[in-house]
Image (cartoon, rainbow, N blue to C red; front, side):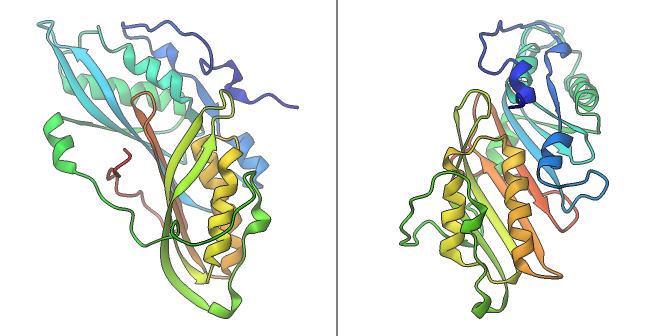
Length: 278
C-alpha cells in the first residue's frame, strides 16, 4: 500500500515550536496524486474554486518589541499545484511570534511570498485586526438543512453507491446543507468536523440518500480538500447535462486554523463568513 505523502510531514510527531521566523517549516503536498485517484486531469479540471484558510493565532513583534496580533485569511487557488499540510502551516505561523517586522505590510508580504513558493501558485493573504474580526460576525448556512430527516443509517464507511437522483422530481435548483460531515486525518486519525453546503441545478437529488452518503464519510480518511473534491465528482454525474454544482465545506478550527474548500462549476471564490462552530 502506498504511503500517504503527509507521512513525512510533522503530523503525528512531537515537534519543537520554533518562535523565530523559519519558512522551511512549511511542508507542501502535491494535488496531482489525489486528482489522479479521482480521475481528474490537472489540465481539464471539472470545477473552479479555492481553498480558504483562516488563522486566529498570528502574532509578531514591532521594532519597539511590542507584540501585535491579527487574524489572517489565506486563499489558495486551484492553479497552485500544492496544498500545505496544516500542522506545518501552524508551526510556520508560530515562528513569527518572536520575530520583528517593520509593519503589517511586511508581515503580509512575507506570508504571501513564502506560501506562494510552497504552494507553487499565487496565494492571497489578508490580515484582520480584532475589530475587523468582530465586525465580520457569524452567519448560518443557506438553504434547507438535511439533518432533521428521519433516516435510518447503518453505513459509516465511504460509499458513493448510496447516492440517488430522484428522477420523478424532475429538474430543480436548490441549496442544501448538513452539519453532520465528519472525516478523519489520513495520518493521525484525528476527527475533522464540518458543515457542508451543496447548491445545484439539475435532476433532483434524493435527500435521504444524500444524507446517508455524507454520513458515510464518518470513518473515511482524507484531507479536507480531497473530501470536497470527492463529493463534487460523485454528485456531478447524477445531475445530468448542463447541470450546475457548488460544494462548500466549512471545517471546524483546529490548532488555530480552519480550512474551507470550495469547488464549483461557476468561476470565482466564495464569501468567507464564519459559522457558529468556527
